[in-house]
Structure formats: structure tokens, C-alpha cells
Image (cartoon, rainbow, N blue to C red):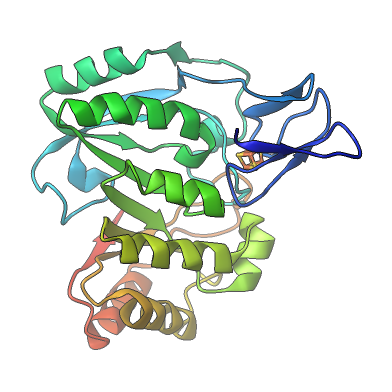
Length: 285
Ligand code: SF4
């Protein structure tokens, strides 16, 4: 069971991600994937795929895991954060139920990945944690066939889910959106400390970890914030963890920004290298 029942009312507490939504009858959680139907938590989009592609693994981005290989990328619908600048909002937030979706079985997904010469399956596009029951089942079939499993994620899992995910995922790219509690609260509707805690758990598990930081002009690009972020990675994790600084574009509910200035990205790279970070990459540039 991935939920708890309240003894006082018929609300259910979903334990899949760090939102721990308390869902009343006939209502959905924040991600709109789970519904309380007759006191049971129902995964409304189990096996529903919004997007599929065969990609170079570097596109995830993962530069230091199975380099020069192909990965079978797929995702579903929904997200557990509410980022105003979401770069995938059409499948994460503003979608009609089952619009442009296909249903796929775990066996079909694995067969397609192998036939496409992929060495891994990447759960990406939307937040994979909200599709955990399905992507866990697919991943078990995939691992039996020798495929590696990748999560491209915001790192906002519940305590229980991160433990489960660490049993079947081989490599992560975690989007560390900013080193600011206010940014997480006001722009992403989430809590920074949960993400930092999960990053430590992933790193200490020995699984492959890379981090992406999408820099937005005048929102999360101050020198102090970049230094704090790098200080966290280099001291609490390791200087060996690859970091990708990426350019943001005006999108979704944040259309009043300009694309991130190149000088901001180059400055971030310089700061990270001054701290001794060994693998620093720039993206969308
Ligand atoms: S997965 Fe997260 S956002 Fe979705 S219903 Fe469960 S706790 Fe809420």
C-alpha cells in the first residue's frame, strides 16, 4: 500500500511523494494521477505514456554514465511540483486526460528499447516519481534483460519512495532548481530541504548521480546562490558529481524573463571549477 487511511474521515494520505497529499473521496492529489475512489488510492494513468523517444544518453543530460549510448526515453503525465517556469507544462500540468497518450505494457517497452539498440530506459519528460508504480514494474522487466534504469527527476520523493526507487534505478539526473528555500516555496511550490536530503541519500547509495541547475536571469543566478549550491555539492556530496548548468527560456507562467545570458552560464562554470568540481557542463547553449 502506498497510502494511509485516516481513521476520522475517508481521506487518504498518499505516500508516493513529499507532498503527502490528503485526498478526500472522489478527489485527486496535486499531481492529478491519484484519485480516492471508495477509500482506495487509484492510479488513474497506470501504463499511460505521453512521450517516447530514442535519445543519445547525453541528452538527458547524463555525460558520465554509459557514454555514447542510446537510451529509450519515456514519460507519463503529471508532476508533484508547480514550477512557474515548467519547460514541459503540456504533459506536466496543462493536459486533458489521456490526450495524445498511448498505453504500453512493460514487455512492449522493453522489447522496443532492445530493438532500438538502447542500453538503458530513461524515465523523463514528466516527474517519474508520480508514475512510480508503473515505472517500477517496467524497470524490473528491463533489468532482467540487462537494461540500466535512469531517473530524470526533481528529487521530491517521500522517504519511503526514495528507498524503493534506489532498489531499481541505476543512474539519476536530479534537477536542483535553486539553492533557496524561497525559490522552492514561491516558484516551485516545494521544499528545498527534501531535495537536498534525497540527493544525499542517492549519493550515499553509490548510484550514479548527476545534477542539473537551470539558471534563470535575476531569479536564481546570483553569485552567492551559485556558490552556496556548489558548496553543498562539493562538501556534502563530492567534487566528482557532474553538474550541468542550463539555460532557461520564457515559458508557461514565467514569460517575463529573457533567455539566460551566456555570461551567467560561463560565470557559473567558472565558480564551480574554482571550487574544484571535476565535471562541469553547460546546456541549451
Ligand atoms: S504522488 Fe505526490 S502529488 Fe501525487 S497524489 Fe501522491 S503525494 Fe500527492
